[in-house]
Length: 201
Image (cartoon, rainbow, N blue to C red; front, side, top):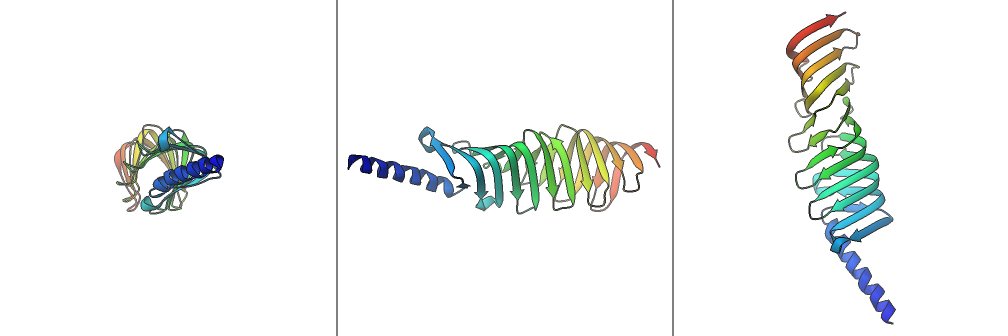
């Protein structure tokens, strides 16, 4: 009888913690562990939904810190921004719910509206501004087979479709090559502003 009461009490406590978390975030997993008085939630083979933010993620492992509102995803990570039709794939990605920022801690692949595919590492995606940042090299391929090789660091405004980079090599779909410095590319208007260093036809 006492054992039954203990089991029921523990079940009610766990249900209360999961319900509190679920008001903001839904964890779908058969392997969930809750520690630190309900502040830390760990899950394996998990799907995470953040309904208010229009965000869905899946990964082999996930850790949620209720105090910092930070979710760390590890191994086979796929995050979908449903409002922007943007998908990020990598091995270690963090989502800061408070700032609404996604950080990739590894090499990542990003698909934007089936229009642009980006390969880079240590990316930061600010969902409020719609901007992607990285201090590393990147390769962007558009749906017309144009290739943009960006050096050192870059910024990509996904809303206005504008790329800014210090150095870049552009290879168009005719295999012409253009080397630029301090470049601004308006993909929407097909305009390029920058210091042209070299052209190869």
